[in-house]
Image (cartoon, rainbow over all chains, first blue to last red; front, side, top):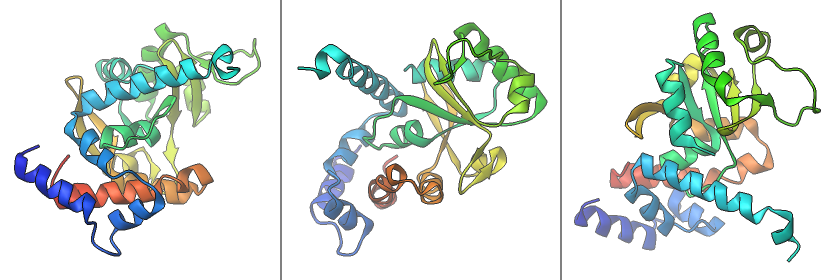
Length: 68
Length: 162
């Protein structure tokens, strides 16, 4: 991501045009800043994050943790 | 779950597939998490044979089926079914012959992008394709992610980020 792209992306998520899908998503509760952090990663890195997320989810689901 | 490894295994086996659903969302840049990886696969005899062969070493069983229910992961079993939800040594993998809102493999392929995942050119359902399939599926959990998908799609188009 270039510096200009990052500036524009930040401007867009801070000021989504009224009526846009971005504005609707923000109103719905979507954290738009996550778009920048995920798109900074390559698809391979995203696949690794998915794997890590699933691993943490699995740990959190273990009964001895859920009971606490 | 091992998305990178699973994609590599299917690719090396010559399986024709498209990553769909939650894993496709993540590969397209959504922060969505999922417990399984879903694929749409081509239902040609050759592809079903390759798929069965690729999965065999990873001990696939039907997920949620009663213990002891016999399941042989071979091309005949795949040909006799359409959608398979499997537990494997690679994690939970779902293989769908069709995707709601899109259709069969060729339609899904037409609605996919190529992403480099671990050095493999992998077909991943596009955001437009994901939006279509989620609307068609229509379950609360599908509709729940629509605002994020639409917002992300617009964001990528306006910024040129991929």
